[in-house]
Length: 460
View 1 (spheres, rainbow, N blue to C red):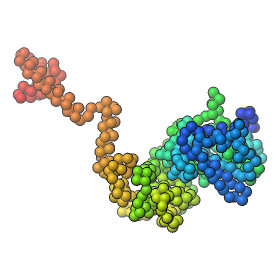
View 2 (cartoon, one colour):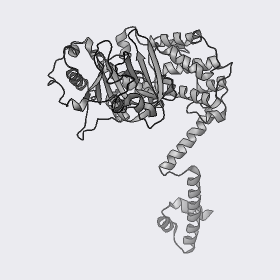
View 3 (cartoon, helix red, strand yellow):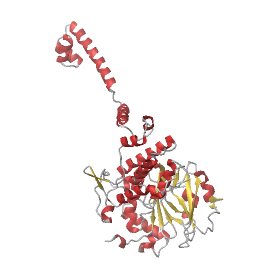
View 4 (cartoon, rainbow, N blue to C red):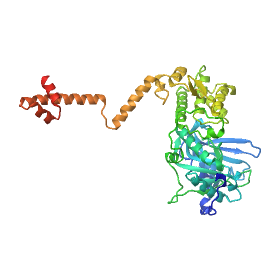
């Protein structure tokens, strides 16, 4: 049976009361934005001609931007623009994935209006059918479903926000959700962490319909269902461990899609990118002479960690270049080499290096990065993965020592000291017991040692 021909009885519209789904823009955004935390969110508007405008605000401004006296802000009432809000928060007023601070949900943008199941029904009925499809695909039901005016926005809220360091695993979660729900209209291009989605209670200019919440997944106590991030990824991601190396995929799109999510390596490459950003923060800027190589390496790690698409590549590159040195007069052609290698990487091309198939993107060792960028030992100690071999051994030794201590194990020094004390005690005890006329066998049994050890102590 083809998935697109599935039929079921959804039981009509959701049983939830209309009042129950009368969710304000502020209440909806508060599920993933906390106005008491530091960070920035973005509002993007687009007019009928397609021209866009974006402005960022600190999170504490969220209530004032989205709500006025319990109603949608006058900024958006009767607005002749499509209005979108960022789903993640950012460290500075720049909506770039490399600038992301934290994110508190996973989401899908579902173009259900392109399919028979998403037509000629009420938004509530379409949401009910989407829930059936999630059950069919063993995908946990979303915490919330929003009718965007034409399609659906499914959102899975987390119990607490996850930081930028967890993006590779978050990206793997998004990729798997899309792969499972793409046959039903999930947009594969709408899964990046810097995504904006339509603001609730504003009008979709293409359809003239209101964007609104049409399903809330509530638990027995009436609270919206939220997932632990690890819990949700365990439910959705493949059970197999990620592979460390992949052969070059064949030319067909289907075979490329069937490759497992390599989020183990993606996490490592993201950690290298985070270290380069930390180094940049330590130094303030990168001096001329190593800027181009520094930028190329940051872009390579950004691409290898799968946190950027070919479409967004140049925008992310410009943001990184400005961070490296705000006085740097760069040109887009400076990014061309990495872009070409990134495109080849996405197309599945591999290069032969010492008999091994490698990605065409740059993957130098930590020692090479240290030499290129003259990273001192003091700087290395503030990084997570860019360490010299000597420092790595030192840190590993300390890590093992702390682990052994947490398990109550003795250090080698403590073991040797205890053994020496035991040896001195046994030696003195053997001699005292021998002076009292006990035999070697009796002494061995009394002290719980071997007769050979008793003979050794008596002979010394």
